[in-house]
Length: 372
Ligand code: ATP
Image (cartoon, rainbow, N blue to C red; front, side):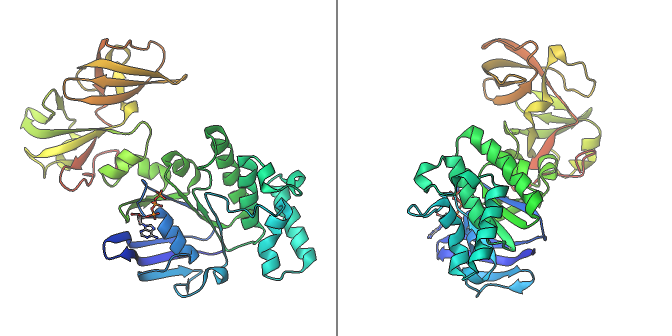
């Protein structure tokens, strides 16, 4: 059991590549924290520094309140599960599981007990005599996790452990890892580029881009109160829609997008008072856009005409790609009466669910009623 803390941690590979830039955050004992972000954002490097596989250029890393910058990986009491599983091909599953303990010269009896316990937890008892090449991807994944479990480490580190699995197996292993963390009650740090994995597994999520930590919060807070346009666009699928426009004061406050104007509810007046006549970015999630004919809510905007470009049937809902001359939007609608491709439909926006971002900094403009 341990907490993990990063204080102003920077990693430079050479003068030009800053992989991690001044990262500061604390992961509590028994917490499951996911590091997420697009390719190259520095999430693996962050994990590797915690593991001790990459050195820290600047800053400090603590495990269990102990500075570990100069402590080699084997003495950090952590176990890491890699994307490629890193199993020894010439060893059986049993030997793979036992190997780390053997190196550390644990007694044979204890090794056997720990291997069998891990095999039981992961339901791989029947595979103990097989070699990795005779295992499916999901089974190999389990063995890789098992190898970490037998060590009984203070902290588990996972580096994209599910990315080699097919979609169905990924979802299955996702729930298994979630169950595992409740059973093991150990601090876990999990790296993925998949926002869905992050949202479903993490107690908290650290979201990174270009080496910089943009926000650290619970999945729901990230979704409902993103700090900036990047976080708003990265979390949620399909992604939030963004439109540039200008604020105008007339009878009330208006967002003039060019092709259409939206009258904003009173509560946005105070929030946006620093942005008179300025360019601003508006965001709206796909589920907050409705077909006018099936919506009769007073908090909705006036209708806006769009052409239906693509319709994706998902079963319980549909994703409708909408177009005007200059814009594309995605709406997530009910399946009752799906629109046809090329049909003109009138849509309305839920005016209580708008987000606004500073068009220069990308920061979300906050303090609106209901948006925190
Ligand atoms: P991915 O999801 O693609 O693995 P990531 O978010 O894990 O990406 P990192 O692997 O941490 O990103 O890489 C962060 C940055 O550091 C990238 O620009 C990468 O090219 C660079 N980088 C990583 N490892 C090295 C290295 N050994 N030498 C030089 N540059 C590196």
